[in-house]
Image 1 (spheres, rainbow, N blue to C red):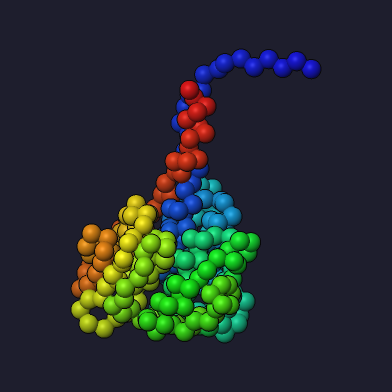
Image 2: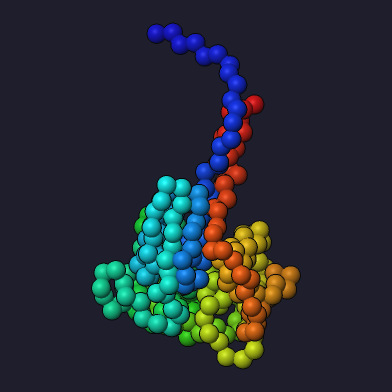
Length: 259
């Protein structure tokens, strides 16, 4: 069989596949914002599905539309006990194979007073989670791990304190703490997270932008070396609408097609 391929011209508008980094952060912010939020251009990858499953387990309700999802987290409240979907007093969260989900949602799950088991699949179960063993007890969370690996068993509620973390491991750990500190009550006029050797600063910029767009308190950023939350800070009024940005790496295939 002979097949002839002739050059053609592509034209029109197309939206690049949703960024997993943006989508998962939107799910996390939608949870802790404790209101109804509409997320346009939602992702559908396995990591995105894991993030949606996690916030549903923690009490959020997701309504799926044609080109958007609505996250209703009005029932979520820091320091309260969450009614897990399985009806247990504690609960289980599965992060799939998503490294971002395990690092970002563990502090958010620790906002509740439940005893929660956090697990994953594939290579995620072999990755070290010593960061949580070291940091979470400093903010009032009990944690037990499998020799520094999954599963993690945690129990909060998380109580923000002045802490210092190692940012050279991954900015994803900091993302989870920033989201948790934004909503958890704390004593005093301010509380801060100091960071040594922060990597992937653009991802922290993305986190702070998502927090702002969901109406969360955004910390004072002191050259990415310290993030200070002020008790009297007033979050900006937002419409609770967020559009997940396209993934530039995924868009590369589309750009090549038009050359």
